[in-house]
Length: 216
Image 1 (spheres, rainbow, N blue to C red):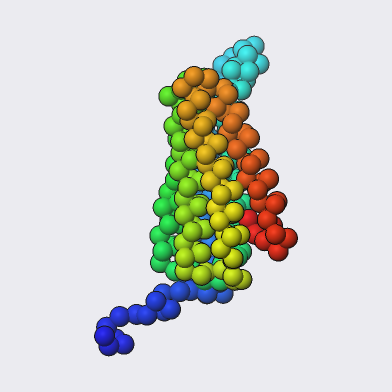
Image 2: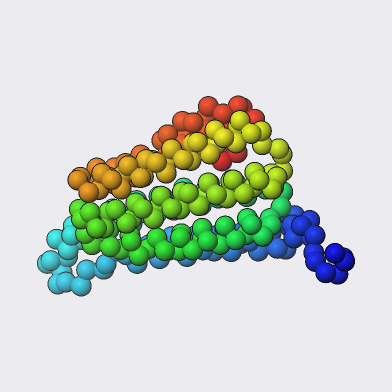
């Protein structure tokens, strides 16, 4: 094949100092910022007479709770994404594609959050909300797997450490999967599992070798 007939794989890699890499990071931050901002719109402003305002505000507590939970979960994903990209030496088509698909899931979060705020004890509201974050978690694992497959790290990530990192985030996703199942019996308990889903991730990551403990 001639040089003019195709670009080499190396030509499709953009170093972290390149404009392409910066645009990918900026786009990601923008999607997170918009999604997190739109979450506040899932909380209704009471349109009632002044004497009824206090009661109406109390009625908004489920929506505020759904907003707070969704914001915390999205913020944790942003933080994890930030840490991951700090460790990347370059971007490439596979990473970019997975990242774009993942951002599409993040941008969808305000919709199930609005449904959850309106019906916080309904299985039909809780299960889809948690299921979306299961898929978001799996998307993040896919980013890590792609980075490992193409050797995109600034420093090499040993296979045993990589496997433990994937296991940590898989535990987080598995906790949410359990939450989806529990939502069919006890919806409020499923939401509690969502609050606690980061605990096993943190515990496993903190047991990594010292040099890799703060990668993610």
